[in-house]
Length: 537
Ligand SMILES: [Fe+2]
Ligand SMILES: [Fe+2]
Image 1 (cartoon, helix red, strand yellow):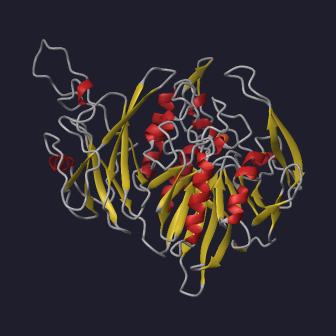
Image 2 (image 1 turned 90 degrees about the vertical axis):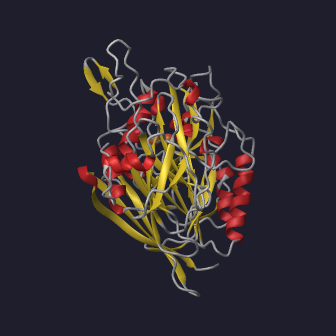
Image 3 (image 1 turned 60 degrees about the vertical axis):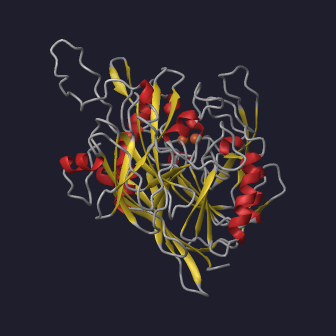
């Protein structure tokens, strides 16, 4: 994607000067250099031929030309656990580099501070390609403040980005959400014709443009990012994914939960190593090297965002590996502790959960709702008063009424606490939204039951062999919890405007679901509704 220089008139020469000819790293002021590389940088030992810019002459007519320096690719931002003071700038290459680093400045200020990036890598189990990711962990930032940054490694053209830290305490801000995107590019040939092989479509580019047009503080990505596990060339698909989304993700945190399609054969013990390498997600107590970052939480304003990894509890066997139960209860224990602390925190009003597979869906003959989520997560959502859940996996838009408790039947049908769909008091129940129209070529909006019903996955056969998925058994229930759905259009995302309200009053989140109807992120509002709860209680 095009180099973006929004908010700055810096020239390339001044950027290169700012980064320094030698790439020396200096940490000054209030910015701590987390993991600042020593010597020539974390990957210097295996680096070769990085002395000059791409295409630069070696100065010799006999020496072999040195390999070009890889560009700063896939630039993006993520928040740390404290989104008011911590952010990470990440990019990646498919060869080793020297001195990966970020220069950072307050918006409109000067680039005086440099932070060395921590290197991570994985070897794609299919192609053998080594992907190197570089995470510059910026700490000690000021809340509710805009920053500019330049990311580079020795010999590479610096790439420019911006981000804003989260406000601290009760404050207004916007977040957005979708899942199930894919890429808008083609990855393989069938009978001489190029086709998309990652369940993507041109809409996968339009949704990104739509999100960026609303300039949220952060974007919640509800899993099934790019379906690389389906692709002929998985590393290319990730590259295409980042090329598509860096347009927005270099300017605001795109915070993911892993979907079943982030589970890739041969990439780590349980398949998530690519995902865990491209993102620098905060490791939680109880996580191992294998599960690091798969579930996490962060706070922005008075909203506690909780990101779950649902393959751990889902009955449906839908990834490259059969991984149900992989955390051995660690995620559930962490979730209970996290929700309990959030609900007891007088500075938190809202608890928002981002996850992939769903507890409710009215699509017929698609994935369906998973009883595992109803058994493992929903009682905790009830106990600690989760306000909102955003999910994907089903490839359409739908929302539930606020639900609390369950019928004591085979499918544990959630019970609606109210039939209101315009202004919803989330102290009565949790609203679940499916926002799975991020761009896939396999939408489910044409498959909705009318009147609404739900296919619930209640069991699955074991795998007959390592790579053949188990077969689910589904039970169809009535859907008294159904709120609204968009049967007419396949693609879109939701925007959430948090209004902290006034002391003694209500705080609200105004939710708008936008259909994405064309290129340039053309939007058409489908519906707007309000979530409300007493401020400070
Ligand atoms: Fe999906
Ligand atoms: Fe999925």
